[in-house]
Length: 245
Ligand code: URA
Image (tube, rainbow, N blue to C red):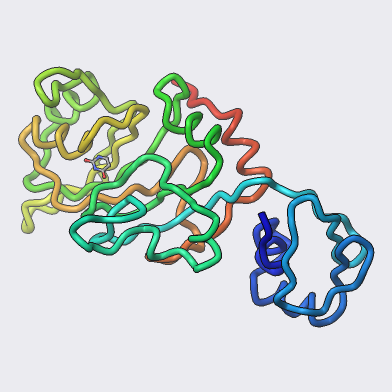
């Protein structure tokens, strides 16, 4: 597949897209031994690319970390015409056919990974590979210690699954507002799991945000934007497994 040189450079963490364009214009980028100063140049992954004489080790796939806003659906298209996470990608990343790794509800915000690497997708979503995800919730009511204990020891959702949080922490109880701020860490990812768990203990979720995915957080990524995962982050995710205490 051919891709624009500046995209390939940015994708390999050489610099931001804009900075990569400058590097090309400054004649600091070589493709197969020739200096390229044309911004529209298309390259393939088999091309030998150098920046300031240093070879770029290429990644065959694209991995992005998006800060998904509320009111956006986690799929590539929607039959009801709602905005999708695909719409938030640049045209070039749309052409790379990135798919969301798992899903976040329409009204849930936060970390969503997207990739075109099927093996990565499988690894991240298979229950055998234990990936911890941290959710920050605002729930209705002043959550009790008993409810927190139940969320930690296991509750039944959908009448068939017993699920639990590997950690549950109350961040704040806002007594005048009659709301609580609670963080829950989950390994599994059943449909509407956080909402169902909180509803089952009597404290329905009013706002939900995924703030961590394994060791990744939202630092530096504004709501509605995304960044590329770094090569070492992808490598680490492939070998990642949550360690129970
Ligand atoms: N649990 C939910 O209820 N919703 C999400 O979007 C993610 C986890």
